[in-house]
Length: 164
Image 1 (cartoon, helix red, strand yellow):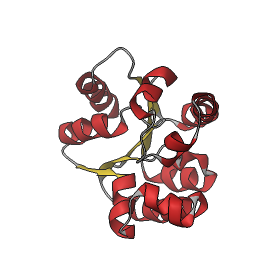
Image 2: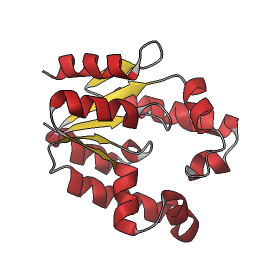
Image 3: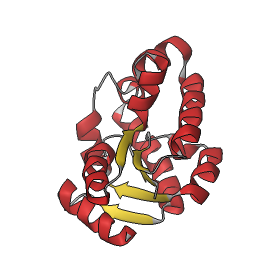
Image 4: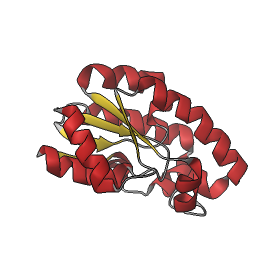
């Protein structure tokens, strides 16, 4: 089974993903880290040197490779913004939305230079991006888990039960 975790930057995809992968007995892949390893640059360096459009192409290519794995994959916050990525994912696995309130996400990512969009945008701009992406996550998720009132381990356990 391939599980694709989606949600806004800082929602807990990587934290929950590692735990969920252990519970399911499969590997875990953080898509941004995967892209960084393949490109030999950080996401911030890719954005700075080549722009967001180039990063989104690398993201789509990485997703095509990762769709073939039996793993829990933490997608980047903008992965589902591309409808072609959704079309690639849907027949190959389950999409899980880690639903975390904006204020929680923003508190974790504010000023994080390793996240180009967080570093370059105001809080209001980030909220606007959050709201636009929230609709995409909600609409395309097979399973939604609230991460605001539960621990990452509890989220992972709930997801494990829902997936079995």
